[in-house]
Length: 139
Image (tube, rainbow, N blue to C red; front, side, top):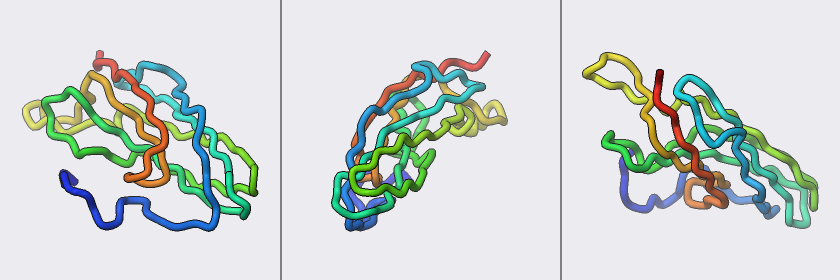
């Protein structure tokens, strides 16, 4: 989980006869309340000549934190089947509670305030788009 090297096969690795383009990554809000959720959306286009399936993956990368986090965490994915030239919008919810860690001193899960980077791609090594979101403090 905290591996710093490059894996032989990254998470989500796979081959396809189709090629896909990612565009228009959006988040439903620029701030994620500690008790709420946002929706991440992205347009996927089959830019190949054959019908194909793409597994769109959403990773979260924490930055500027004193807590030890993995390099990135898979927080959502969705398979989409596309005909050549077809475009679909994929939407994935992201709940703040999925970003929590267990604070031993408090004896409970805590959502940390601060920036996170949402990384969208076809595998952990093939990130196509990024969006930044600020996680708001718990009230």
